[in-house]
Image (cartoon, rainbow, N blue to C red; front, side, top):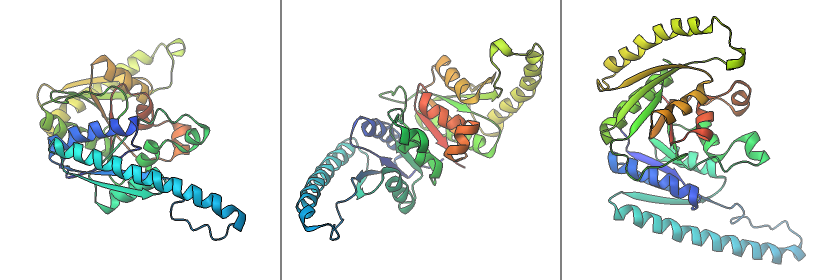
Length: 298
């Protein structure tokens, strides 16, 4: 999958630095250009002309403070840009007033991005974030391209990395397989294809006939996975597994058990409410994956 332009959303803190580490590694492997995007606090361009006279001095003081923070952000972005170019990665920067996810999405559309990289969403634990989703989750739901999220353990160098790909045989899942193939080729890595037979049953309530049902489903899924290895041109050393359980949790556990360095999953971009009610493998992986997640869009 050709990657020419990567938009990196950064808060200029630890989360943003993690996103940058992944984006730089990807850009070096693909010769892509980075667009480093930061959203400044809203209010800098507001005139506040409708405020009472007595409040305007306070408003002006706030505006000066926001202006100072904006200038500091520009300086930090410039340092990040130079750091990228020091390691041979072309980088552009953008600092705009607005909400982070809207700024990231707007930039991705304007530069025709092939990939968006964002920080770890686990820190979003307040009530608004639980209801509406973190920046990473909001970007994921509306992104025009695939999204790389820097959750879990990061490697300093992804050469030879193992990629766990969740496969449900949908168009989204097949695209995740192709991304896994292409990325593995770029980094001389290995791919493991994982198919999960979904069920909400716990071990204490599992019907006695379930093992036979699972065996029948697995006997059908395994040949399909093996056929994908051939039809999509993956290396003969590609491994396949058929598992059962809640999809997101099972994928994360399997990634840990095989010591995967990246998890690739297909993303349908379903809404927050639907995801809360029905569950979403990609949303679960964003919060609980032991390693970075690439949510793939066709």
